[in-house]
Length: 124
Image (cartoon, rainbow, N blue to C red):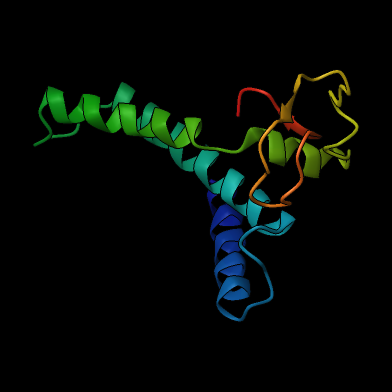
């Protein structure tokens, strides 16, 4: 019960900060608010519709609602949230410098240089 009260307060504060332009949509506060909201709502939907029979909701709709809870959990950017919570830099974790690169044999449109080794992965 206290969890939902805290969640309401966090979401209300987050909405106000976003409306007044104090939080950027790609900033760390937005990422944390988004993660907390999606985890809370996703787990609630899964548990509520998974364990309760709601009158007027047929089994197919119930299954669709449960799957929507899983979709909410899947769409979370866990990697970004992990970096923010732990305070680690994205570049330091798993930053292998031996990733395959490609050599541009024709002039590269962004930089117009030929035979330059770019640091982009080969398969992108």
